Image 1 (cartoon, rainbow, N blue to C red):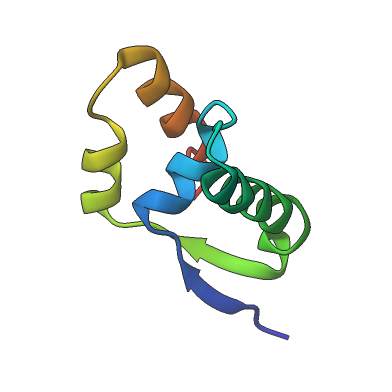
Image 2 (spheres, rainbow, N blue to C red):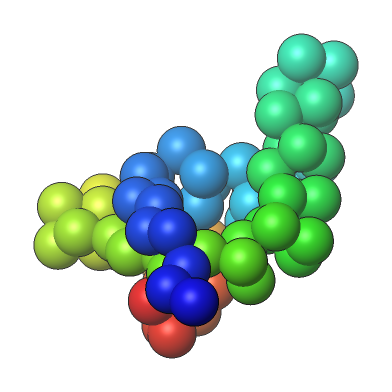
Length: 74
């Protein structure tokens, strides 16, 4: 059986790797993303684009490396 495909966009990677937010709404997005990534993502063939790689590579070098590490196998 083939897995469904899912495109992972930049905000998913950002929510997944950011420090927990003090904003309750953003924190909720972060938690939901973390739970999906660990429980549901394995059920999909996940893809990103070069555009996402370019976006997650910018900004703080330590944060960018963390984002790039998370998508290494996509």
